[in-house]
Length: 81
Image 1 (cartoon, rainbow, N blue to C red):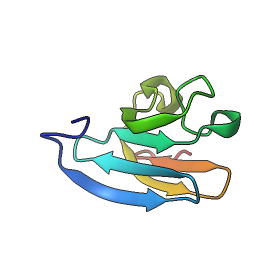
Image 2 (cartoon, helix red, strand yellow):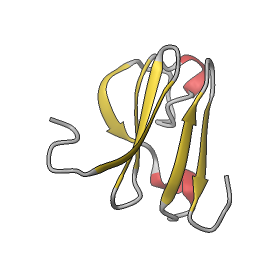
Image 3 (tube, helix red, strand yellow):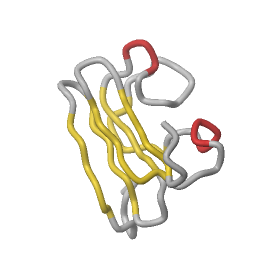
């Protein structure tokens, strides 16, 4: 449902959370959210993919993501993380 109609161009799976990037450069996340690692400004668990807050990336398209054990990393089109 959440990603219906979206083209996924990248995916990363951590131990308890996952990340994808869609063709428009939007980062999505879901799973456990210990310490706010999903990028939704809270610590609520997400069972379905949800767009990460755009302001985290200063309006830039996300080009790479990585889900670790307890962290999330992203790189934007201008090379910032």
